[in-house]
Amino acid sequence: MAIPAQLRDSLQQFEPLPPAVSRLLRELGREDDEPLRGEISALIEPDKELSARLLRIFNSTYYSGRYPIERLSDATPRFGLSALIDVLLTDHLLCTGWSAELFGLNSLDFWLHGSVASLAVIETIRENPRKDISRAATLAALLHDVGKVAMSRVLLTSAKELSQVAQTENITFAEAERRVFGCDHSDVSAALAQLWGFPDFLVEAIERHHKVPLPDPTASVDAVALANLVAKTIGVGLGSEGLNFEMDPGCYTRLGLDFNAFCRVCARTAIAIKDMKAAYGLSD
Ligand SMILES: [Fe+2]
Ligand SMILES: [Fe+2]
Image (cartoon, rainbow, N blue to C red; front, top):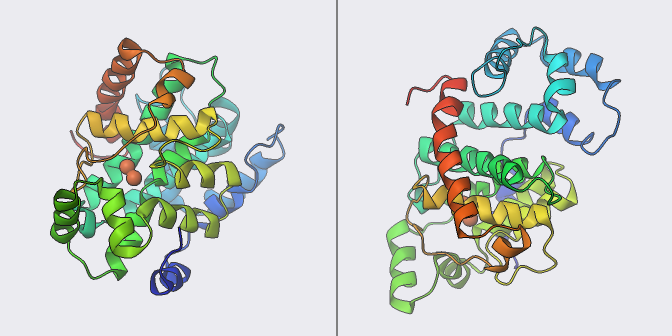
C-alpha cells in the first residue's frame, strides 16, 4: 500500500545501518565466504568495543558451547554469514534503543520482540529442517516491525486512538493502521529494509508478515509470519496490537507444523530467551 509522503520522506533521514552490516548484506547467498574473512576483520576489528561485544556473544552459552571463538573472522565459517549479520544487527538494535510508542512498545519491548522472533525462526528450522527456510530469514524476523519505530516518530496519532478504531470497527490493528494512515507498519518496515539494501526475498518476507492469505508464500515468508505469532504467543512484545492480528493459517501446514510442533517451537523459543538475553549482556 502507498506510504504517506511525509512518512516516506522521513525514511530517508532514518539512521543508516552500521557499514559492516550494509557491506555483509550484499554478500548474503554467496557460496564461498573464505575471501570475506579478511574483510570481516578489517570491517569490525578496528572497533575494539564492538569486537569485544561480538566475541562475548559468540562465546556465550547461546552460541558457542565448548569451542571458543578467538577471532571474529572465525565466526563465519562456524556459524555462517547470516548468523554474523544477525548478531551485528541484534547488537545494533540494542544500542540504538529504538522504541515504538504509537504501538505501546518501549525500547526493551521492541528489541525483545524482534530478537525473539529471530530465535523463533531458528527453532522453526530445528523443528523441520527439511523445509527450505533460509537462515537469513532471522534477519527479516529481527526487523519485521521496524516500521513501527518510523511511524511512531512521524504520525501524530496515539496508540489509544488506533486501538479504539480497531475495537469500534471490529478489525485487526494492522487494518486500523491502513484505515487511519493508508498503510500499515509492514509496508513501512519493508520500505526501510529496501533502503538498507536487504535482498528482495527478505524485503518480501517483511512486507508480507500480516498479509492474509500470503501471496506466493515461500518457506522463509511463512517462517517470518509464524515467528511474529510465536513471539506474541509467548507474550513478548504484545504492545497495543496484542494478539489482534491475522495470520495465514496455511503457514503451519506449509511449514509441516501440527499443533504439537507449534507448541514445541514456542516452548523452545521461550527457553532460549534467557541465554539470548545473557549473551547480549541483559539480566533475566
Ligand atoms: Fe507486525
Ligand atoms: Fe511483530
